[in-house]
Length: 322
Image (cartoon, rainbow, N blue to C red; front, side):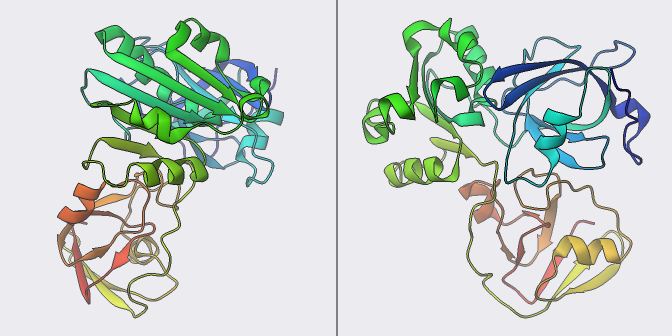
């Protein structure tokens, strides 16, 4: 059993111990994390994620997929990403039971809203945020169905857990069943709230089918940033930091987060790709150019918050509550 130190800069009280590491599918391990003293962990709700600050210094975000009513442990599922930047490879190859990892959060950009009926659509490791939602839907007696696609049956994590729900779950390994007939499943989801998580191609296909749906009925979560194309403007803009009394210039190629931190203002951030929501900041004036993959249409239209790691400005000046 290795005993790697938690990376520097991680508060000791935010360090959790790896209590179990289990292979749950081809290329997927599940980690169970507990506080070293056994104390209670912060509460969370279905759809939440945490930051893992790995002993090698990398920080990655993972959806909580365990039992939300277990106050003393977190569970996450980690897919090995062959083309990734090293975080998942470290978890698979080096992180061991007994190691300490820094933990940030939980935060929730993908909350389960009340409904009498749900359709859940998962692709691959996108099953992880949906597992607690399914338990919640079952608990409250909602009508629900899961359409779960994967490369092969053996690559589909938590299959045994889900099999207990019987015919509410449709398993669609691509090598056996081909791609899911999304228009058919979505057409059957009358009056349902639809939650989708998985690869970008799956999300794009679902969004295309649901383009004329009412805002808020379809909810998605992305593990990789959505391609937003070029910024609306390619000139420098000014950002006024209301509480700090500072002003910074954000040049093309730089982010608002970079400029703010260079001015000495500390902002909590994590993914730097607009997918985790950690750096969400209140906008007091100006028009943001939203380039994240977290805010929904209503939040974008309101224009009163932005993710400063990727979003920019449509106006010459933004005023932020920093």
